[in-house]
Image (cartoon, rainbow, N blue to C red; front, side, top):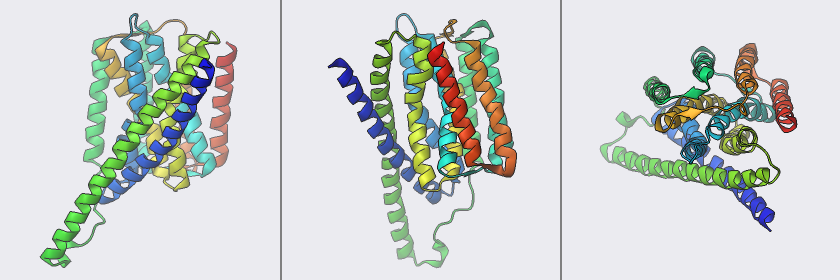
Length: 325
């Protein structure tokens, strides 16, 4: 009976994740058009932060337990970044080839490579203290502010100078009302994603523990997959709607947020400690996948179906390795 309840939580989580992804993409896309912000930037900031909320909640909850479960928090971030690159981008590219914006190649990918290397360097002593966490968290605030500041482009709105005053007021009123409607979709989507991920992790972790799986392995697989499902759900919906910028922005942005915000804020609240269960090999796979993504994205500035299939194959091999070790 207990296992049945866990499976029901899994199903509920999956349903909420799909709906949440649908609502989040819809609201974010409409707001980006109204505010004159490119969908890529919305994916890198608003959508990435919203879909990274489950990782943040899970990591904070794990690290605040008595005793703290640093492996669960760190494994969640490492596993989620592996999942974002290999699974989310892989699935998105297999559904529909993803055109890569030049900004991703010139700015976001170098930033992701640098902070991934810094993250591994901070873990050289198997711990991230409050000072190091605060440094990472300051990084995400700076990154977000700079991204939004540079995101403004010429709005594609109605030419209000050509309208009578009464028409201008009508357009403004409708725009404001619709904006609140779109914000509501984003908030509803984020809420569904967070709760859906929580239910899925609850059921999945319970099932995994019944088989005697370690906390680090659970974090790298079940928890990482569960907390990355918002990104996966969002990317599938975006791919079906031909929103390639949203997919690449969501995946890369989520990886950046996971390291800077999730690790940074969690370590600021309470220092993080890595045990041998979270192996250097796992950290190496995360960094290697980040490097591998570079030539894939540079080639014709498109992540093709074949490259997506390679990423999925790498993820499958890694999961099999975790299952056997």
